[in-house]
Amino acid sequence: MRTLLLGFGLLVAAGCGPTEPSVYPVSGTVKLGGGQSPAGCVVEFSSQAEATKGLNARGEVGADGAFTLKTVISGKEKAGAVAGPHKVVVVPPAASSTPGAPVPPAIPVRYADYAKSGLTAEVKPDGANAVELKLDAK
Image (cartoon, rainbow, N blue to C red; front, side, top):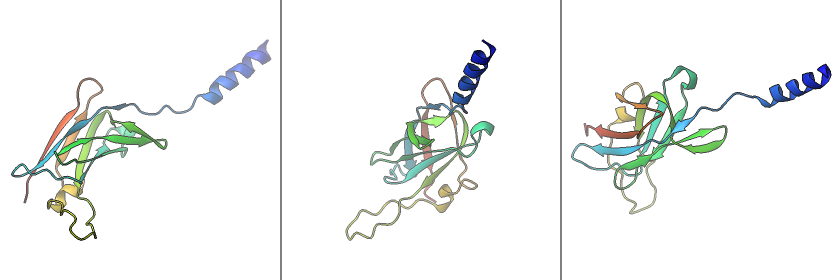
């Protein structure tokens, strides 16, 4: 009987691995000074919480300035971001080599650098996480 219980205990323990962090829905808008939407840019949140530090969530900005974040955890894309404080950047799209392609709006370089952007957000596990990012054009 002891051997059976020990064997069962080992099977249960072997099946228990680290748990993946939970993610929570996050959406929002980005506006440049003057109300222009930086379509094609990517908004990225980097978790600053100790347990998930550096875990990033990303979302592309649409023509209306709206974005929805997604996080890749263990190779799987999940809608949302982990809870806690985040540093935020807005990264412009790569320049297109296609003639006549729309030119994305100019975003100051500082917004693509976590150390200089000055943008932060708090993701809460309850309620709506609606984020409004207002960027200076200079």
